[in-house]
Length: 252
Image (cartoon, rainbow, N blue to C red; front, side):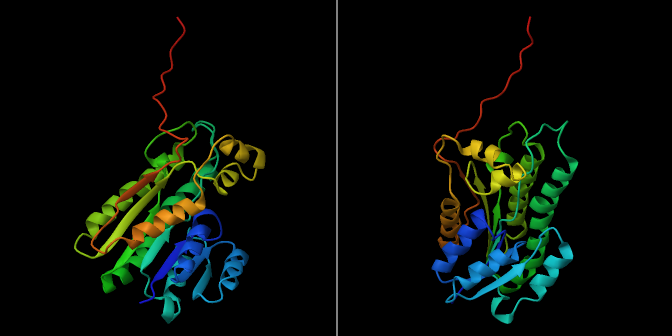
């Protein structure tokens, strides 16, 4: 049976790489994102794969609900949902951060993930099969300066994923939280509001993870036997480790 995967944030980075990985395995794809031209370019570039493209902003609850309700019959039975849409904005301390940036991160990383999950989940329950894959981050585990609300949103993803597992324990639905570390994509370009110089500095002198690395991991967690659930995958490049505790000492 040809399986169906829905990927949010499919226009770039992890989402685009994930779309390509599953297309090469012959899955039916529902690709969603705000940049419709990019979605259409991907769809026309894979003429032999059934692809349904949705121009969608996951922050808009009614739009999410309508898009899922309007899925063509051939795409309605979603086997895997990849909640990939998300972003970081700014790197200022909490006392200087832009509240608009904070709200956008909460609306996208938390509310968007909630809307999509709540809308897709009833169908999975009815069929008693499915897999929800959430894109968290090591920022939800370890603090760093300026990571305030972004880290908080990814900590939500971690706990939400755990609680989903408890809610679904009497079903055959799986839940996985993928937590990448340093990865080179449009992430830093978005964080610094299009400042390429700042974004490039993030990766200078490193060999970061790539979107293809994450797509490979996502494909792997879907391919283990049906009775196996990969709860969490925390992954960093070998050039990265957890930061030491910070201690500020007053001068005597």
